[in-house]
Image (cartoon, rainbow, N blue to C red; front, side, top):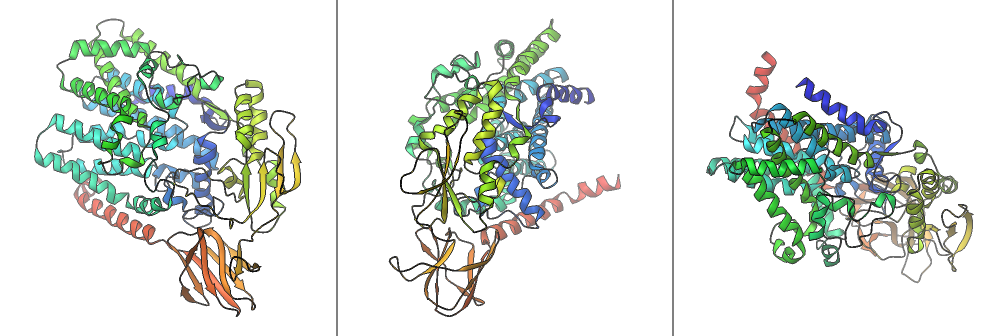
Length: 630
């Protein structure tokens, strides 16, 4: 086992040495703005800030009109590895969580392969083909997907051994880890494929029942995340599921099968020469190498009657048909609970890769000669491909850009809005980021545009937000004071202009002519707006001192959302919804108003999850006691 671990660690080191030695923030294939900088790092940085201040990251005041970020889910705040963000600087933790996930994927893959009877070298080949496949390489910017996919081999391992001792409990824990990682789509698909794997191996009703108990247990364990997310969905842009335009966009076509042979047949997006407009390169690639494909064919020929081979062949064929005809069968899929919220079915390619890797490992085991050469060719192909997806961004990227320094000079509570006309600034930054000698320089410039969610790192509140669960609200009461724009705006006041020497459009900062303070009193829409004093504004608590004077409606320009409670001079008041923000009735007298965020969904979910953990410990009591005595 030690030799296997050394080989896995060595491969990881060869590919990701820049990440391991902290040469910069891991940036996957593109050293520019990606989901890492626009979502995963800001969300986890907020987690780190909250934990260090003694709070749980329930509400992000700098995102949108304030946003229930834990409920959004992609922060993965209950995923165990993410505790590193509370210990190390966020970018350091991000690098090491990524490396740990790659290592665990390799280790779990090896353990699964060994459990099926494959010999050590064959199991190691399976581990390498699966863990360092093109699917993982092109998706490694999606840390949530990676964290969830890490557990897939253990899903198959413990499904296979579900009748031994109380392994159904371990299977439930594994499914729960997938849900808590922040990518439920993979957890959902894992349950389906795991169930198919189970019924191929047994028809025993008790065994099948144990699988369903494991699935239910996982939901109970993860209810601390699931219930808050369910509560958020009706308020989000996906309240009714994904829209038809999303179903029909960025598909997978028969010609994409060629990507198994040549991943760059349609061009390479990192070089700016990808020619397809009907698909996303990073979603359609599942390259395992030419040698692994040959081993796949050899494995089918030599072991066609093997039941595992048959399962993985059937599974991969079913998945390919599912992906290829997803648009045509989507309306029928809606009968499956939760399916309406998932897009990009190509993510099921991870199970095709697992199937192909296993069959290739079976083929490798049948070889009589040249095994070492074949192994090295497989390894070299995948390492070479992965080298295109190991970029880092200079640590300077996380320093404060000029535009942040400008906004910090304004001590008032306000939000900004970013207007990148026709995505001009982003397109310029993307183009120059494909030129090695310019990419770092241009990306440092582009930070000044404060792309959605990146503003959170610098504690600047922005109405722009990047998340599938952010609601679509049309209101004037956004508290937006400044507009960052790549184009000229005629009706606002220009107060600052930053020139980027032609690499990017000039950045213009405008102050809005009509600006609503964060909180104010108004009698009706046509009456005078009277700002009120916000004495304290924290993530889950807001204290307002209203002076004696005008009565009417107190408007707080924050997202109206369940879980917020208002107290007026100690007495709880009803919060009304006013154009998507909060409103309470106030009198003309002096009053102290407190808003607090105490979501029942979170508190209830945590209690249930904790109780389920104690239940598991009780079920494992004898095993734990015997281990301690030993």
